[in-house]
Length: 199
Image (cartoon, rainbow, N blue to C red; front, top):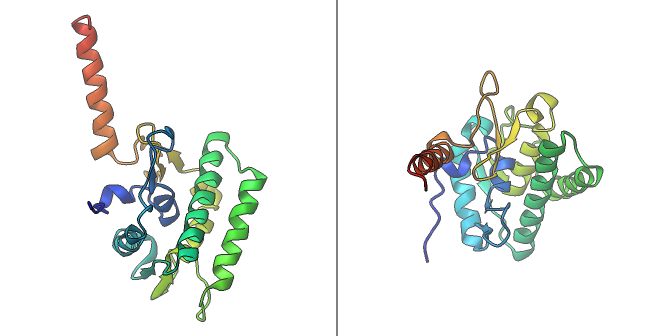
């Protein structure tokens, strides 16, 4: 079995909630779609990598992957709710009431069932030493509801991942210039050369 390389590109979303949504690739082409969490071991590996790649959002934290089948299924349900909520918000410039309600209901269940004796604090002010991956995704998602952050969420035109554009003039076009940006440049070059040679 090949393990997924949870590298910086896999965390191009810029926020844990968006990175979680992006664990399904090729969403725009269902016949090609791949769920990176189909193997529950990858959820643990994602959680471990997220603690490192999301340090700018969370500081020093350990994300705990769900340990039961029901917890795994709940995380997948939360992931899909986050994807629907923010993807439609980008495409339609506003939330659908049902999507917003679904997310808030799941958020309430996750936070209410957690062991948050020290209270719940949204990033970047969080000082959690350990947090369930689901709770982290919920708090990250709630933080994205701020209009100043929500307006910066985009959909990559190459891979269709959600990402947070934190550039000063909001000019970032790709989730990851080194991957999707270069692929798009290569594709344009190929078509231009083909046109020049009458192909």
